[in-house]
Image (cartoon, rainbow, N blue to C red):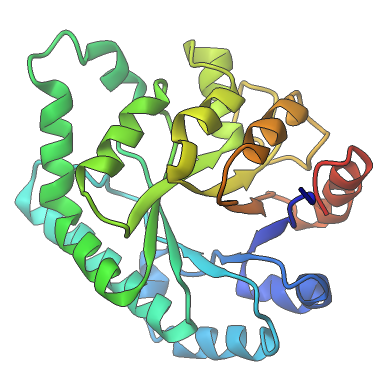
Length: 271
């Protein structure tokens, strides 16, 4: 099997610099300019128009990062649920306008949850019920629109919990995402399994991966090879999947993309 083609998570402002790189291999792209409430509440059409202009000729898979600041997707408060649904609907409007087929949303699971699930009766079921009550309508709209929502691990300690949550919707419109740096932090600081175990746990539910290197202490988003993550084990786990997820460099400093690609290619992990 050939090595996977690596894409990136970029803002619209980054597209001009990386346009040729994206088009040369028709790389997957995640637009990260549409998760802020200030953007979603504004006239974002000019931003979409610029993205479409820069992406003329791009045939790789396209997604966006959905909103996440200031809320969780498992709220108990009906009024907060309404705000979450509004933000997600606004982001799905962007997906429709730009032609995105995937949207990243954040996992509701926290370290507190992990340590208290067996301390509070029905805690796992209640979290799932609250998530359905908050984004059930969003999942249905995404299904109708042809967009897949991918739940990204944030504080998740046990990756199987997120898989159970995604499966509970019984919908092709909700799948899993892994952020390698988040998983490495959970492994190093909170006793979670190693990062490749997250891949194995997700299995064929895995549709999306944020590739970032880290030290295991903080959410570094360093260039690949700069931190301590064991990349070969992750790519070996990815290689066993029948359907390849979108593999996207998500770096704080986008200038680290060339060095990341040099490392990935030198190690024979991707192209």
